[in-house]
Image (cartoon, one colour):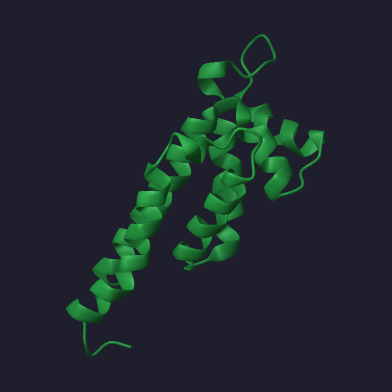
Length: 127
């Protein structure tokens, strides 16, 4: 794995974690749009994070969101650019899109789109 791939994976993991934290409880809406998850499947993601009261606290809601987003991202394999692009598109389709106020995801998308240019410049003989 070259250094550009390491950077791409770091960006991808940062995007997944940042999105999970940013969305919090709204991850359910995202999960329904992305994975067409049922209530039972959503409850399955939340089950390991339930407290003594049987509920997932608002401060912990990022955990099932992260679990879902990480699992969803695995289908993309090394296509980090496609994963971030698709995530951005789905976030834009939410009722109150997080991407209106939260520009970091757009910046990450621009960055990963520039990685191929960087790779071609840094490693001109590797194709």
